[in-house]
Image (cartoon, rainbow over all chains, first blue to last red):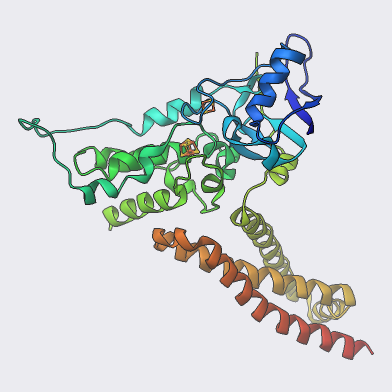
Length: 232
Length: 132
Ligand code: SF4
Ligand code: FES
């Protein structure tokens, strides 16, 4: 099929203002959008800049806006989005070049929720046991690949870059509800602050955007509830 | 050198979220509308301080067709904002309700229409009947 890629370009050393470039070529409906972008890079315009690594939905580096919604370019088939495809960088981050955005703040927010196991008790002789039921509680949020599709789909984040964002809350959830972890109070403290979970307005854009189908709004709701019950 | 991504009004409207996003945009718009009405309302009452005549003249103004049409919008705004607010409260109180987001949205829309349509009909019929 004949496809038309309309791509957001920002090449500060060439042009001060961002602009759109259009590329037309033949592709298979079963090609992924990322294959199209690779084709452009390799055959048509080597100056196109984007991030990608694994090309199989694991590394989370190629989240971008595809026809208006955040998706991983390597997980979307051209046949599913149609012959006319508009590609833009994630919203809310500063654009460094073309589709590459500055994610420093994103990882700063990620670190702010202490995304690692915190334990006080001395380690047991063998291992810290956990029942399947206890594991199940946070199973969903272990699937996150930190692609930022959720955070940059969130209107609360667009209007306030200090909002910790859904991705960081998902990561916090993964530890808050882990029975072996003992850092819950600290995390709830961080997330209970002004730019924590309460900025979430239950809009569901994050959940719709997540390439891992994580029920993000639900996870955020559970954290909100934990904070509210703690204060009660 | 890098520049902020364009998150102006156009990209807000351009983002393709789900039904939750549309409802949220409407929620904001109706919230603002109701707030503006409230401000207007307070100003109106305040005008009573300038005497009965001024106040009556103003009330007369609200009999005009455009004002009656605005009332239907107000009804829309208040009803929608209330219904959507209730759905969000339910979803915030019971995170598990996530699993039924689409169903809750459907229920909300049905309830909203069930309240709004008859009420709007009564208002419009009254207005048309009154004008004719
Ligand atoms: S929760 Fe989903 S959308 Fe958000 S960063 Fe993780 S994988 Fe990406
Ligand atoms: S390239 Fe790794 S997730 Fe798409």
